[in-house]
Image (tube, rainbow, N blue to C red; front, side, top):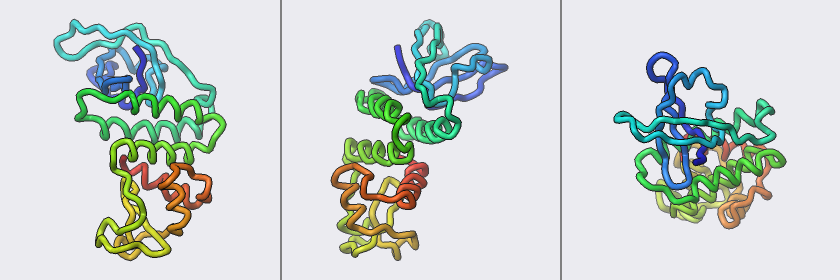
Length: 204
């Protein structure tokens, strides 16, 4: 089995509760002395076996790390962990998952080495919102429902609004329109990418 570690919670002594985003589920496992194992880190992709006999929760066994070359680059790892951390609260109450979520992280992990991680995050968030049917084109304000002008502000989950409705910074609508239509960040400068990135970190 394979899964991305999206949450680590301490249990008794040095044990850990490890939450994994698998291909078809978000599942939590118990790992004895997990705090001693360096391969149990937020964001890591691991291969493992599940021992289902426990009455409490399944146990994690025979764990091995499936690494990516950028993991040794501190800044890229930090950005990756910030991104991956968003998935546990977002998917927590879902019993069975579409493989989309696992594949989204896997695709992002492969792009992380050669592309700007913040742009990868912005494009992945667009794909997720589109897949879930929550992508609102920047035509009408989510707050007042009136047509948007030449400048647009965004709320959490990239909901478009008038800058005056949320007293937030604005992005030219023409550039944002390209992002919403194509899912690509080519037309956005680094300042606008930082703006989107900070919004996405508030929650999917």
